Amino acid sequence: MIAGITQKRLIAFTRTETRRYLASRPNTQAALKAGADAYLAGVPMHWMRDWPMPFPLLVASAKGARITDVDGYGLDDFCLGDTGSLFGHSPGPVAKAITRQAKRGLTYMLPSADALEAGRLLTKRFGEYRWQIASTASDANRCAIRVARAVTGRPKILVFNGCYHGTVDDVMVTLKDGRTVPRSGLVGQVANPAEHAVVVEFNDLPTLQAALAKGDVAAILAEPVMTNCAMVLPDPGFWDGVRAACDATASLLIMDETHTISSGLGGWARNNGLRADILVIGKSVAGGIACAVWGLSHDLAKRFLAHDAKRPPGHSGMGTTLSGNPMQFAALRANLSKVMTKANYVRMERNAARLEAGLAAAITGVSAPWHVARVGARVEFICAPGPLHNGVAAMAAHEPQVERAVHLGLVNRGCLIAPFHNMMLVSPSTKRRQVDRLIGAFVEVLAELFD
Image (cartoon, rainbow, N blue to C red; front, side, top):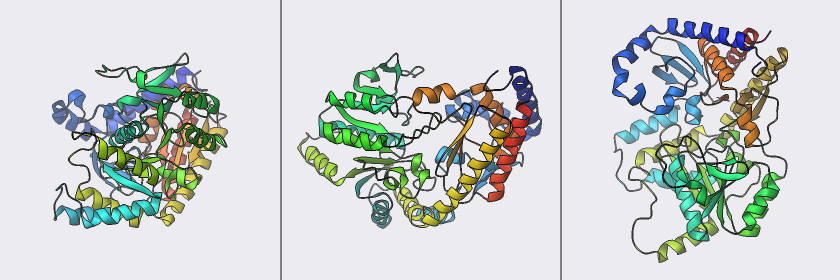
């Protein structure tokens, strides 16, 4: 048995769904055969191989919460670019702003009027920070780590076991037998990231307090809810304790809200009264265009500016030439003012609650030892009992063979979810009927897998 399913039934289901996918997409296969060889391993980015299908879909168009592939199939999209298109594909105000700006210039390494307004809107949405712009959340996290080390004079960054903060070398670490060690599988890694990092389990406040008490931790880098393994929510009072521990030891708290921006207008931290010293948001903040932001609290901004004024001239190690370009600011301004609204979050949360209830009922209906977790517009089914408490439990909950089968079955029934885990996002464009179609497809798949 694997996650409550007999291996024989799982293999049979996967074979049937694989044949169904192969037969349904001749145009995709022909196009890949003709053009994929130009790319390493046949894909523009290596993780495009991680989809559960025999070969990836080729997208012809995407609008709202729907994707159409080159074989003419429409899919209800609950992956939404793994949060990059959280607010739907090509939101109207953002698409119009990009079109207008494209006629005025794509990049010129100087601010614009849109930049000033975007700064005001960032503060309105997320709180009193002093902002900087990056192209990805990975870039923003790298900058945040540099600032934290600079102002504290400390070397170490604390992260939670099972976390993910993009391709940041400094935090590619995990726990093994209670020790912080580099993650396995890193490509071309020379430096040992474990020398300047500390890993503890999420929700383990005593161990975190003990780590901070050593006085060598510059900052904690964390999501307020762990989202990139299997979803783990904080225990009541956990973040209050973390904030107090940071204050007591002069360590900083960096909140990476790249995924939890789905939790509500302003993000999880602001909605739950959690004070961050540095706030990072990537992926969807500009409506799908490559953009991320990082902001320093007023006190920390003063400390960093004082440090910056005294350092020798030379490269800071922060920033890239194309970051802070006018296309980003045009999209930011449009998304923050016209798309990232209270009304849209209400719509997202309502449909996400409907999805959560429908998936949970389907799981109960077949007596599967699974559960459903949700934070705002982000929903996940997890192939293990729950709720999960920490990273080690989240990693143990993954059943790749089962998950790939379910994902493939959903694709064949017209529903796309995130390939790396079992995450589903509900956008402002997502219709109730799309939610119901996903629930119906999930019911069908479980009926095939469970006796």
